[in-house]
Length: 211
Ligand code: CDP
Image (tube, rainbow, N blue to C red; front, top):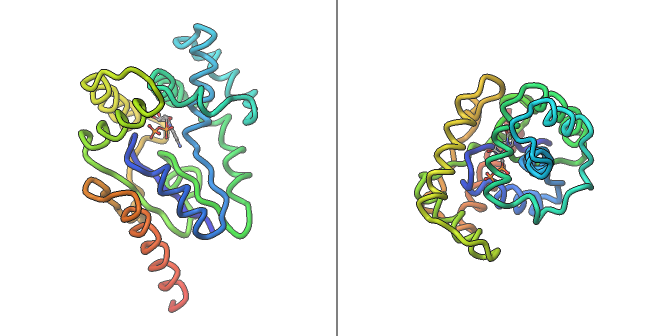
C-alpha cells in the first residue's frame, strides 16, 4: 500500500507521515530531504544559481551522504525549492522514489507531488495544510529548538515565498490531487492530526473492503 502525503511547508505532513508509517509498520520517505540534499550541495559549492551543478548533484545523488541536521536550515529549504523547480533535477530523483514506493507491505511518502506525479496510483492520498501564520509559528519553534537565531517576520516571508515558488513552477507544482482528502491542521495538535490521518486511511481501507 502507498500512502501519499503532500502539502506546503511546515503543514505537519512530515510528522504525520512518520507517525502514520510507525502505526502501520510501513517505511517512511521524506522526499523533501532529496531536494534539500541537492540544495545543500549547490549551496555549499557556492553554485545556487547554476542549474547544471544542481542537475549533476541530483544525478549523482547518494542518500547516505548528508547528515539530516545539515539539511534542516531555512537557507537549505529555500535552496531546495529553487533546485526543485529544475525539471532535470526532478527527473533524476524519480527512480529513487519509485524504488522506495515498491516496499512491502507499504510505504508512506511525504512531499509536494507524491499523489500527483510520483505515485498517482497511491491507495491513500492526503493533502495536509494549515494557514501560513500557523505554519510559520511551528517553523519558528522548530528552528529555535535547534538553536538557530530566528527572525519571525523573515520565517513567514520565506514560507510564503516557498509556497509561491512551489505552486507556480511548471513541473510538478504543489497542488492537491483530485482524489486526495484535505486535512487542515491549523487547529489540531500533533496527536489529533495523526489520528485524523489514520482515520482517513481506515476509511479508504473500509471502502476498498466493501467495494
Ligand atoms: O519541511 P518542509 O515542508 O518545509 O520542506 P520539505 O518538504 O523538506 O521540502 C523542501 C523543498 O523541496 C520544498 O519547498 C519544495 O520546493 C521541494 N520539494 C519538492 O519540490 N517536491 C517534493 N516531493 C518534496 C519537496
